Image 1 (cartoon, rainbow, N blue to C red):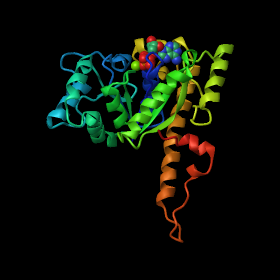
Image 2 (image 1 turned 90 degrees about the vertical axis):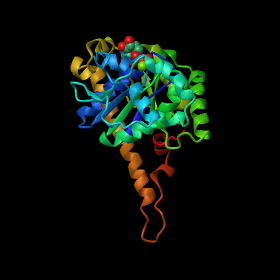
Image 3 (image 1 turned 90 degrees about the horizontal axis):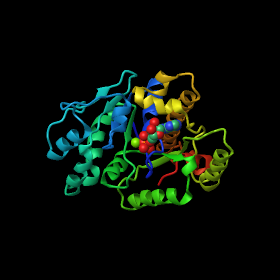
Length: 296
Ligand code: ADP
Ligand code: MG
């Protein structure tokens, strides 16, 4: 029942591609997964090969119903992809809808209200947002429990990432989402063979290796991943033997393990010892655990 988003304030860093392929990889680990397209560009919807028509119920229609207090079937609008993941399409009208949201009471929590009603049906809900730091993205940030931050290594800048962390800290100070945890930084579009890429990865480790988890495998820059969206499939369907497919399989296992470690930590907090004292969490002990549980 984790709600995750692959997020950054930069476009074109591979967020949508990672969301789709992570979802497909989780399905292959027997997880039930819902993808929610919350980007007006709808690249997740098209990347799954879905063609909308005038009758398609999108996330924008669903949110309108939430705001109007209309009766809503939690399954409304949800489609299923041939590879098993469920998804909720988006549409360009969502962009204009941001303006109507501004005047709504509880405007930061409209998406959360809906996600809270549907998430129990899935092991993972993955929300794909847009790169801007606007009200739509604040809605994503209040709805999720966990975020993964992709970093395109060629474009890496410590200042760029700082802006994003400052934004997350501002939300946290305002109490918009106290549950939010950063799972880690995920180097993406990495050209593994070049010296520059290695140097950029070393730079990321130097700047953030002590404070954040950096995912074990980087997402490689490969035409295979680029091709997946035009075919409307994941890398597992497109080329299951590729390095990219292996990387996504490992990423899904890492994501599952991070969730497990956290719930073990929570159980340790809640379980009293015979003497009545609460057990210490592993989190308090070591830097590795600190990495795994970095809260914004
Ligand atoms: P974002 O959601 O961050 O805007 P996308 O996932 O839409 O990024 O990717 C932007 C473009 O880069 C798309 O054309 C996509 O096919 C391509 N792309 C994404 N990931 C990779 C990758 N690892 N290697 C090569 N091309 C990629
Ligand atoms: Mg995108």
